[in-house]
Image (tube, rainbow, N blue to C red; front, side):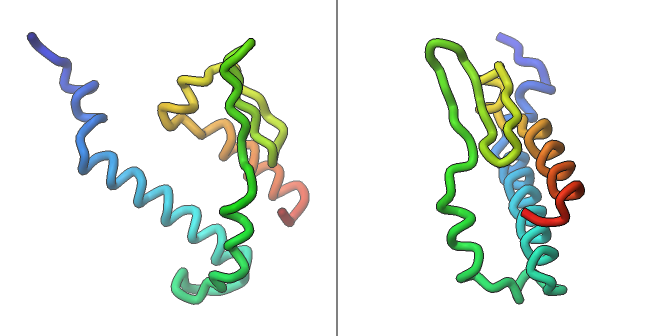
Length: 104
């Protein structure tokens, strides 16, 4: 049985680990920028605890497969698309929201 290289490569542990670390670093850089600090190690950890505890998205599987982002209000009908890690529409909407309000 042959597997295509592209589908196998995306599932490698190292590839997934690198993607996860890059996403985490991007989130930390945004938090550092919001707090006005120049380095990730200077982030006030007590100030971000509430951010991690807030509900971000609702995943509805019945009657319609739908993902609703509570921060931006965007809704996507592709539940599996989002669960597979495709968050670009939500990230883009959040960036636009932050740019338009200069806060969040």
